[in-house]
Length: 178
Image (cartoon, rainbow, N blue to C red; front, side, top):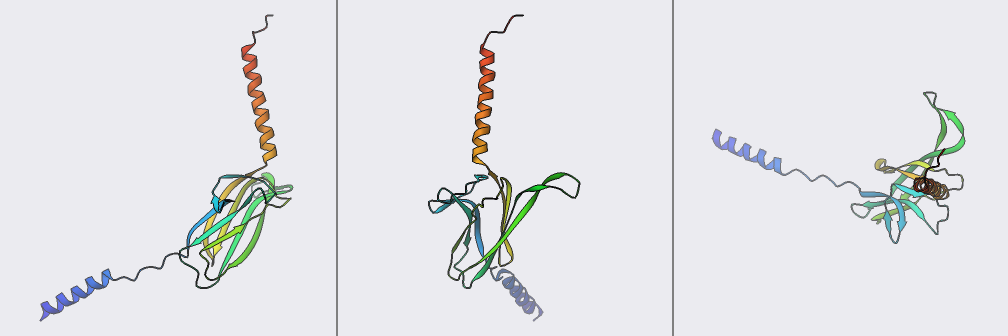
């Protein structure tokens, strides 16, 4: 009798160990940050500071693991360089302050993909930008990217090329005798 009870209890334990309820998949399957292009999002580590949205639209895309059964709150914060006067940090180093833009929207029920554009404003500065996105208070995206001034970059590239050309030309010319 004891052997039958022991085998029965052992069988119940083994069966219950293998019958765990499946954990529910996370609400957000994937999150991307970059430039919207042709229905896709190009994830980049650098993007130009382009104010004309007809030339470039940047933002983030959330893909949900299943269509939403109810509206969810999507909150995002964009931490960017400030353009104001220089300030000191806690360690006494001087630098420009940081600005943080906060926004939110509701992703409606039935959505599988949520796209949000983050347009550049005229007063925005180039530098390292950090974007954090929360879906129902769960962190879905935390990425940084380098935003650069395309005019300054082209000028710097031309100046560097001119410097390299001048060095090469100097190497080709015969040395002056004294």
